[in-house]
Image (spheres, rainbow, N blue to C red):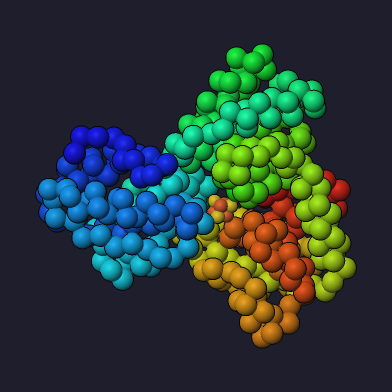
Length: 341
Ligand code: SF4
């Protein structure tokens, strides 16, 4: 049991932090494993590994969604009385406004280690050269960070000026990329799907190029962001022209509870003439919002839990639902887009 990584198919799980705890703890352990849906496949591999360990370990596998390290299954852990929560696939959420101390949590990074077709590199280089993006940042989520470094090396050796951003991006955290906005022609994001790159394109004044190793494609995130921004400015327009009963959605998942942000937005809203209703929600979805809206008949909502909910999940809601940044821009009369807060 002295290995640091566990290979699970095309992914490597960094298990050293878990092994350290196992080594240092005498008594049998009840452990709750939690992974995002896209990484739940490592449950099998990791629980087999733990069952092979010399120590008696009782493993529970959380089926709940895990949208990030902001969303630990603390309620399940308390009910089960586990000794340890093992969160897979993210580092500790640094934007949390308070610490969860009741049950220890260990974070196990997972890295994609699959083979990437060489055509993807060639295609990427062509797209960057065609657009004259010679100075770029290269960032990724944690899972793609090893691949990101390979791509950064390739671009560096091809003559590009590359800022290899070591801190992984989150759907609500891009500061380590944005500090290079003045230095670069564009940002390159290595990650599967639209979610992470889109947030960067909403935050940055520079073009964003996505490279998706799972779909073998290079794509313009900024083009997608233009469509999203049109929709968001329309939502802000609708919010500005509606009534003054405001539902302030307060996150009840671990680390999505942001009391300072809530207090700030509430004060801003009250000072701007709104009547504020504090509404709490663990997982906010359309059905929950319909239920509260049927009951209270409010005019608009501002979501303080996850800033992606208004953009990705609630953008078709029949009443305006804003992110904190959108609400701040609206009441202050700013014509620029603010994401996330
Ligand atoms: S974008 Fe939402 S789900 Fe992702 S880390 Fe931020 S708050 Fe959590």
